[in-house]
Amino acid sequence: MSDINSTNPRTLGRGICIITGASKGFGQALGYQVSRSLEPRSVLLLVARSGPLLQEMKEELQSATEEQQLVVHCVAVDLRTKEGVDETVRVARQEAVDEIEHVLLINNAGSLGDIAKFETFTNPDEVNSYLSLNVSSPLALTAGILKLCPCRPGLRWSVVNLSSMFALQALPSWVLYCTAKAARNMMFSVLAKEQQHVKVLSYSPGPMDTDMQKEILRLTNVNHNPMPCHESAAKLMKLLLDNNFSSGAHLDFFDV
Amino acid sequence: MEIKGSDITQLVHGAENMSSTQRKELGRALCIITGASRGFGRTVARELSRLVKPGSVLILTARSEENLRSLEVELAGSEAGKSGLLVQCVPADLAQMAGLQSVVSASRAAFSEHIDHVILVNNAASLGDVSRFTSSFTDMAEVDSYLSLNVTSCLCLTARLLQALPPRSGLCRSVVNITSLCALQPFKSWALYCTGKAAREMMFKVLAAEEPDLRVLSYAP
Image (tube, chains in turn orange, yellow):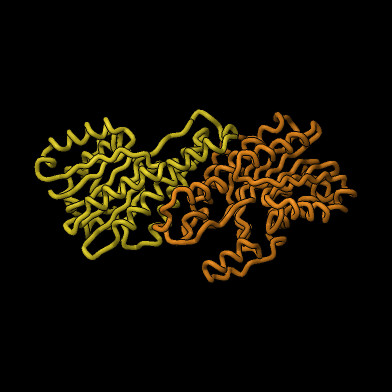
C-alpha cells in the first residue's frame, strides 16, 4: 500500500503479482521492477510459453528472492489454451494466502498478427486464433484471477491491460491488432464499471525495443524509434504506486 | 421496428455527402444482408427492396431457412418483386467456412456488369449473456464462440466479398456495420456485446481508412 511517510519508499504491498508474457520484452522488464516493489513474502508468477527463459529470469531474481523473501513461480504455459489459463489460475490460487494485501494482474501477453490489407483476412481460423489469444485469453484469465480469494477490506485488486494507441486509432493494414486492442479496451472498461473494488488500467506503453517491434519493422519498414522496455515499465510502475488513476482509464506513456 | 425509406437512403450515402450525392434510389444493386430472417435484418431487406431499381438482386442470409423462404415469398409477391427484383436465400452459418463460402458464391453468381451498386449489410449478431459480469467469463471457449460469430465472421465475410466483387469504374460499393451505443460506451454485465461491438467499430474504421472509395457506415439502430 502507498506509504505517506516520505522516508519509506512506496510499495505494492505484500502481494501476488501475475505477469503474462513475462519471459522477454516489456513483461520481463516489468517483472524485474515489480519484484523490487513488492513487500516481503510476496509472490511473483511469471507466465509465458518458454520454460527455459522463465527459469533464467527466476535465477536473475535470486538476490531479490533471498533478500526480500520473494517467491517466484515460473508458469510455462500456452495462454491460447484453456489448460494454460486454468493452470495459471491454479498456481495463483495456491499462493493466495490470507495475509495477501494486493492481487495485481498484468495482462501483457499478446501478438502482432499479420499486418496486411483488410480484404486479405478471408480465413476465419486465422482471425479466430488471433482473437482467442489476444481477447478471449486475457478475459478468461482475468475472470479466473478475480475469483482467487474473497474481497475483504485491506485487499487491493489491480488489473492492467497492455494496450496501444491503436486501441483508439485505426491504422491501415493493422485490422487484427487494432480490433483486438479496441476489444480489450472495451472489455476492461466494462470490468471497471462493474467492480468498484478492482482498479483497472489500460496502459499504452509506446514503442519499445521488443521482438514485436522488430516484427513491425520487418513487416512495415517503419521505425517507430523504440525506447528501452525498462523506461516504459518504470512509468507503469509509477502509475501503480501512485495509484491515482481512475479505474477504466486508458493512459499512454507519452501522456503521463 | 419501423424503418423509413429515407433512413435507408441516408444509411448508404452518409449525412455529410447528402447535398451532392443524395439520391432517391440505390441503383441497380446487389445487396447482401446477413441475419435477414427476422428483426432488423428482415426490415432492412424489405426497405432495400423498395429502393433498388429493377434488375437488382437481394441475397438474404441467416441460419433459419424457413424464415428466409417466407421473406423470399413476401418479396417476390411485392411490387418490387413483380418489377424484376431477384431475391435469393442462402441459409448459412457464417461462423463456419462453408457458410461464408456459400454466401460469397451466391453473391459472385448474382453479380453482373449491369450492377452499379454493391451493398453489404453486416447485421447478423448475437447478444451474449447480458446477465453476467465480466468476472464470470472463465471459459475461453464461450468467449471464442461469441467472437467467432460477432467479429470474425463479419470480418471474413466482408473481406471475401470485397475480393469477390472488386472495384471497377461505375460501381459503388457500400459496407454497413450494424452496431450499437455499446460499441462506444461500456455497460455493466454487457461484456461480450460491448466487446464485440467495439471490435467491429474499430475493424470498420480500419477498412474505411484503407479504402477511401468504399462507403463504410457503422449504424446504430
